[in-house]
Length: 293
Image (cartoon, rainbow, N blue to C red; front, side, top):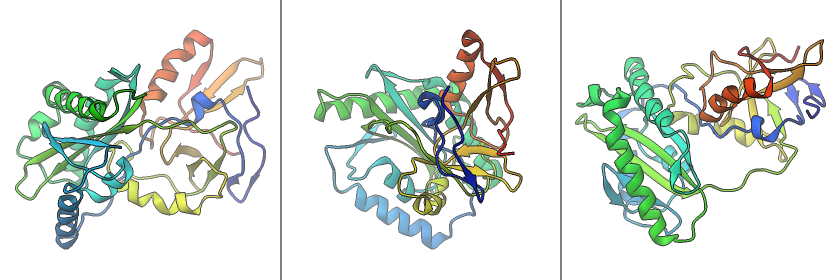
């Protein structure tokens, strides 16, 4: 394995060399924030209507089974549309969704957690939306329609990024959005990270408010940095802004050991797959956050 830490100073790591497939996990993270004021909600409703009036061939958007015109990428959509639970998936071999049922369960669980925390209005169909089994058909129908719509303008498309957002309006009706765009390229090796920012509260709930809240940390990173990793005062490393974080070391006998947090982080799809593969690779897994000490 590659050398992980090159230098640490003032709680920052300038550059870490890690296994690319294990470090940068494309997992969006959850965050609990204060409830939005009525004036902010009204502004956002107006913004959503204005965005729906124009369209771009670079994106597609389905809401509750119906096509909506959209002119923004997934990040802008999550920052602009009403706050709610969300998840970001990708296609596999173009015609399949990687870990679809994982994402379906995430929307259901995040909806439940946000309603309990008071950061999301309880929708009329709450009992349906917080159960993966009853949510699945509606979610799958939206995904299929959004992907088909995107393919109409991109017949030679490669892999796609699928962003799902569940919002609840003042009448307690829910809107299930599925946004599709090109997946994009991976960063070149070595992947560079910077450590700053405290761990989040209620990390298990994937809350779209996190997209705006993390922006300050992202803007403050050094130019060559690919990811920011959250760390507490004791030097414990939790997760990235949009990834799970791993440290691979060797024990005293030379056997590989993988450290990654389980508590206080959002458990991502690629993390789940990586941990399933570790026994086959004879890698011991310790689900504890790695420490800079």
